[in-house]
Length: 298
Image (cartoon, rainbow, N blue to C red; front, side, top):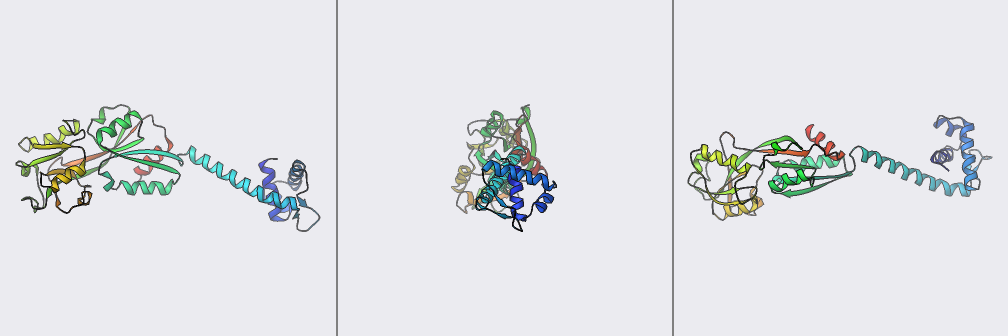
């Protein structure tokens, strides 16, 4: 018994005719008759009543028709899943993103990808930027969305793409003297206690150095009250009136469950957070390739 014999049998049963079934498969009537005969010999009983017009099923034939349809359906599904797997339509994509970036357009991109490739599981990991950098280098993540706190450009094993340039905002408590301004510059923050977003939370990094230079270019060294890699903690301290912070635009007041924080645009050259997409050059995950292609086409 083979799949072609089952296909021919189902076709004869549905058409009620050897002639019509043969025509639908572009083979001769003799060929399809021989295949049905071989199938009957294999199962050990007649499956079709050839004397009736149209050709009808025997009791055994009715049983086999139901089973044959299920077998053919399962086989087609298995072939489809196999083809999907070979083209990246099935599998897992491990995606890391910097804390807070869930408030960007990332969820929309993931939704669009899922709608086109529903059999790909996108596993998401929300981490600080240092952890993301180490994770993509070590193969823990297929792709990350991050700002560059570790000088990823020096990593020859990685591919990088700029996702977007995100404007920065000054987060202030609602009754702060600067809270009513329509725009601020770093020079306006000279006397402020700064709650500093830092990837490690403990000391200067490649990313820290870039933003420290912006303070220095404004003519002063910032008074850093605390460093943290957790945006929610920083914003909670702003709400408690401990100090102010500079955060990317995708940060929102409802992150901290309070309305005691306002966000004022920060003006000036370089006052952006560059979000990068990074992945390993040797990562051959088909799902990754499809994700990057779709992302690049939007």
